[in-house]
Length: 259
Image (cartoon, rainbow, N blue to C red):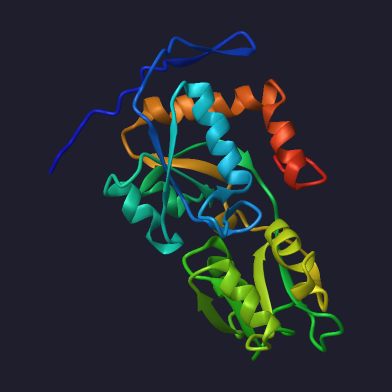
């Protein structure tokens, strides 16, 4: 098996309030993305990739002095593909959880938003364990939302999907009674669309450190601390120089970084 040392010609470090890079050139940073998680990552009809995660990836690569090479990957194969060196980092709204940290490492977070349930307007049940008992609850497979659904709604009938888009599609078609996802993904990817006009959030924000972790971070392989720390420093840098704010404003009416 071919192995190569990860070159970080861009040595990134904090210096006062700024980010100092001594880079002039480096190999592309191969970034695993999903492309099916609007508005964070979307594959357009022409094959191009857009979204908040994509823009963050490009901004971080620019700070590192490296070209971004985006590599599409189905969500449930993200971590195995990273460990198999299909790419160098994951920028795909992956929550920093203790379970995942046993397999891979993470940069500092780059955003944090709560989860919420969505159901048809006027639904005759509440977003509670009792209310969802016996109901078909859709979640994306292998996500923190599956973890939470299994923990918080043990009497619901969980229906698992490969992509979040498939969850929304079956909710619209009436194949499931409710869905659980990131609140912003639900708002921007479904409720704000024509397909979601007959639906709304039920219940409040859902927070659980065990399942949802510390926010979304950039994932790297264990043992690659130099890359991890460089990515963390780059996140701080784009927050400080206004790049993050400009990207955020393209997609959301408020700062999604969180506290």
